[in-house]
Amino acid sequence: MTKIVVLVKEVPDAAVQKHIDSSVGRLDRSGEKTLNPFDTHAIEAALQLRESGALDVEEVVAITVGPSSAQKALHKAVSLGADRSIHLTDDALAGSDVVATGYALAELVKRENPDLVLAGQQSDDGQSYAVGAVVAEHFGWPALTQVIKLDVDGQTLTCERQAEYGYDTVKVELPAVISVGDAINEPRYPSLKAIMGAKKKPLETLSVGDAGIDASKVGADGSQAVWQSSKQPPAKAAGTLIEDEDTAQTVEKIVAWLDERKLV
Ligand SMILES: Cc1cc2nc3c(=O)[nH]c(=O)nc-3n(C[C@H](O)[C@H](O)[C@H](O)COP(=O)(O)OP(=O)(O)OC[C@H]3O[C@@H](n4cnc5c(N)ncnc54)[C@H](O)[C@@H]3O)c2cc1C
Image (tube, rainbow, N blue to C red; front, side, top):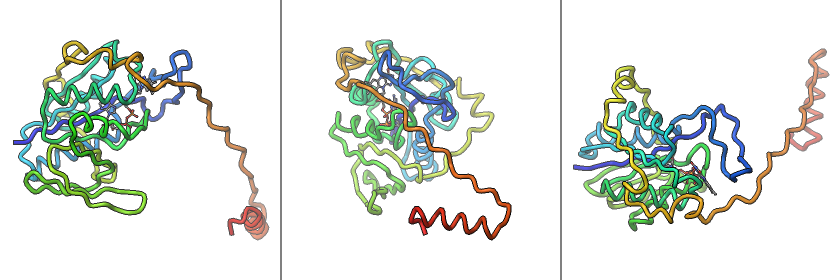
């Protein structure tokens, strides 16, 4: 029997304007929040491994490190099909960088002792693409990123991963940490029944102390990354508007405009 842990994160909704709160040097995470859309592909991959019989999956456990509001992201994860969830939440975690967050997640993974850890390719806010690899490093397990196809043969996973130059095919032995690319599948929508039933699925809420986490390795004091400064991207210059009064002239104007910029 196989246990799969899926790493899921709460992120600001895509419609929320993101900016750094310069008083603390962190992303302002106020406003509407949601389950990181990239993580729904990881949940879907776990469900497909179970439903296809490729792995004899006993349990799919969604885990998160985040503030109390992150419980909603876990409800979404279980409504999508995870069997239960774990929420690590503690004021001591505020200001954790990628390494500190990865350490905290690794401690949760250790408690679960899974055969496979699945993660999204990136978070929609931090976008480090790094957490999966940090978690794997704590166990010396193989870590693969951007995996878009997973074939299972016993304890061996054959993974196709997207790279800048094409595709890699890589074989790894379980246990492993696999960050899936968003091209791996089309995540399902939760049914109304699943949404209603989500709150009944087991949710364990842990503090840093409960999880046996060394508080000196998390939070702002346990993090080595320090925000220095940031600036808004430059405002876009206004575009050129060409009124279509005479189509032949309009086409001429467009071609001249493109020609000037060596685009034709
Ligand atoms: C100086 C500094 C201070 C910061 N302070 C805070 C803070 O106070 N609060 C805060 O929320 N963030 C804070 N962050 C951001 C935080 O470190 C990152 O969000 C976190 O480490 C994950 O990195 P990422 O978002 O880039 O994830 P990525 O590496 O892009 O995510 C890849 C995948 O890893 C998994 N994953 C990522 N994060 C989590 C998580 N938390 N729980 C479960 N799975 C996860 C998901 O599957 C995700 O798809 C801070 C960062 C820095 C540099």
